[in-house]
Every structure is written in structure tokens, then in C-alpha cells.
Image (cartoon, rainbow, N blue to C red):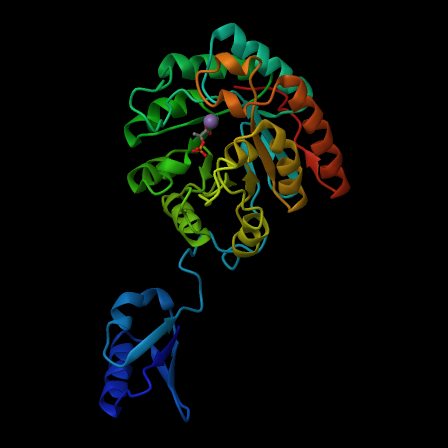
Length: 345
Ligand code: PEP
Ligand code: MN
């Protein structure tokens, strides 16, 4: 950690900073320049609370050398992590293709959509049974019945399933049915939920909050990792922009940036990022071209009757077209779409 002192810092203040650092069992290296005094702190940075150091009179800036997300950082784990979702690998050149309706729908429709997206190349089936809706009067999801329908339809077509868990009290129930737990954008900083999915054995899909910085996202991943669950996949799903022309602003640069900073796989969700079916294929391919480890797309066979997010759903045939292009692009980068597992529990 490097401390930059204020230009007028007195000798007493400098001595006091050094005393505080040494009291923590760390070494302080003083460097006096013409205009500024800098103190380098040598030793285990985790011993120091950055905020209390910043509160010492005379200290102007505190620059940590290591990122605050210790377990999620690339430094902690130079090789990329590969997350196994019920036999489907994400990361390390293995591409996850998550597809399915926004909400879990009727049983026969779930089977139809599952069959079509699996045939197109999707390897993880999705659908929300607990929906985080802006309005309390909007459809809230089918609950446990939805979890059953999702699992049955996904597994019948050889795909593990991912579904959102919105409340720490539901983690155990959702984990009984789901191969992967999704923490949605609105719940990214629900720390009780992060701790609970961290304690679960299921891999977690952590979506970036719509107003969250990359640092916020990685700190939230850190909550899950710090509970002992290392199987976290991040998801860029668009952040709030100023222009209502798209639902959100697709931050494609988040992909290579996160990959520089962290070993965790990151996928993109062009459905929620754009909210427009006609923009989804291009943004899906852009995400893969930027290095994403997977793509999450909402698919519905009759968007006008969808229980949620119908206007942004791709039709199964549109999904098949972009899935074929994603397969080609993955191959161009020496990657491959993860095959379906031989058996599914
Ligand atoms: C979803 O996946 O349907 C969803 C609600 O996503 P997000 O949390 O990214 O809005
Ligand atoms: Mn949705």
C-alpha cells in the first residue's frame, strides 16, 4: 500500500503515520520529495483498514497495491477458472450457451422450447420461477412448481438448468432443483443472499447490477468465494445508460476488463442488455469476439403470450441461426461450445 501525504503534512503527522503503521507490525518506507512525502507500507496489506489509514491527519491518498477482491483476483489465481455446471464446462475455452424463456411457462411449452434450443446447440436451459419484478402486481413466477417444470424440461433434453434465487431463505429449495443458481442484477448487492449462495454447493451465475461498477461486481463475487464456493460465473447484462433506445447499455468492454482483473469466467446477456430481439445476435457475437466464456439469451416460441420479457425474446429459429454463428465464431478463436453431459442427475 502506498500513502501519499498532503503537501503541508507536518513532521509530527509523518511520525504519527509511521507509528500507526509500525504498531500493526508492518514496515514503513519514507520517501520525501520536493513537493510530496510518500510512505510505502511493506507487509501484509490485509492487516490495514484502508479507511482508518485515510482518516489519519496529513494523509491525502491511500493507494492499495493489491485489489480488495483477493480471492476473485487474477493475482490469486493466474489460470482462468473453469466452472462445471452439471457437467457443462464454462471457461478455459469452453463456451456455455444458456437459453430459455424469461419465466418458466406451461409444461408443454417448456419441453418444446427446451427441445428447440438444445437442438440449436444450447447447453444450459434457463427460466425464472421466482421473478424479481419492478411492480409487485406483475407476474412473480410459479415458485416451486416452476422449478420442477424447468428441471424436468431441461433434464429431459440433456441440459442442466439455471434459475434465479431472489431470497436467502429460498436458496436451499432452489438448489434442490437447479444445477446453477442465478443472482440477478437487482440482487447483486444483496449480501445475505451472496453469503447464502456462497454456502451452497451449487455454481452461481452472478449478474452485474445495472448501476454497478466492475469493482462492485468483483467485490460481490468475493462474498460468494469467501464462503467457500469457488464456482462463480459473472454476467455482463447491460448497465443503465441515458438513452432509452435500448433497455440498457451493453458494456462489452466489461468482458476483457474482468478477464484481466479476475480468473472467473464471464458471459454476456445481450437479451437484457439491449431488450431488442433485432440487436441480440450482433451483441451476442460481439460478446464472444470480446472473449466471453458464454452467452445467455432469452428464447420463447410465442413472445406475445410470454409471462415476462416477451418483447426481447428470440424465436427458436432465430436462436438457432445465432447459435450456429456463435459456434463458428468460437471455433475461429480455438474455443468450443461445451457438449451436453452424458448423463444428468
Ligand atoms: C432474468 O435473467 O430474467 C433477469 C431478471 O435478469 P437481470 O437480473 O439481468 O435483469
Ligand atoms: Mn428476463
